[in-house]
Image (cartoon, rainbow, N blue to C red; front, top):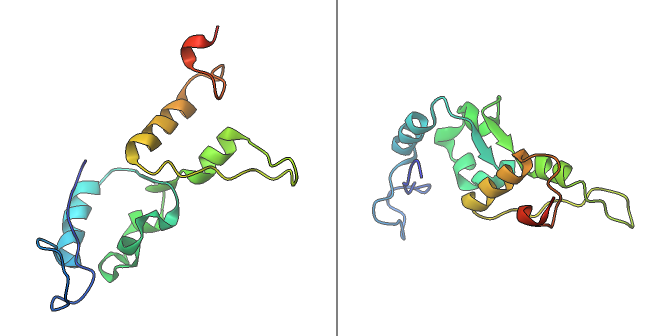
Length: 125
């Protein structure tokens, strides 16, 4: 994990703010320093939830894309090439849910083409 912070997205006097939550401007600087020069992979553009709606992050290129933030949902849907038999349209891929599962999925996509879906690698010859 690169960074583990809680960001306060409500005014400072609001009730229920978790202990240790910091203001968006302070968090923005920590996140900027951590992600500087890195490419961000997300499942979908809305994966960032409240972070992408926080005013302190409005001008950040990694939240808007610009070659630094890539959505994997379309890549995975295209890679799977699974079509709905009734409509002939691609079936959308299911979100992996956790970063380690997304990494595993990326490793499967990057593996050699002879790897077929649904079969363990050790059983193929």
